[in-house]
Figure 1: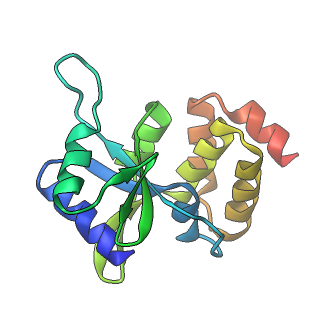
Figure 2: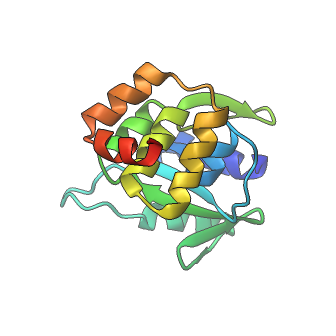
Length: 165
């Protein structure tokens, strides 16, 4: 995975992407026991075009120049299936801005905070997200005040209470 992160850091340094952070199941692995996951979810802030639309074409073109090609929703980078996801709402945008700076095998990167991972899972509401929330609650050493604040600001308290009662 370190080679993938090196590629992402170069893309960011070159201005192909504005900012990225690891989210999803792989993001949760940084806070809790490893889980089976088959891809790496990379959330990216893309600058909108003059028309206001977001295009992943510059990213895919830059990756293709490096020998990495898209296949469906993924790009295979150094043997890892990577899914690039734009910051699609205010909660994800906040998670991207507040992502924790870490080092993975001496490679700098960013990962969503556990509190944001939980809030995004609650917002998404899939059955597999409930398991991720339970795992993070049990293992991540959460900042409960921050989590409560995020859940309140994004109108997720009712769902949270249903999931945790």
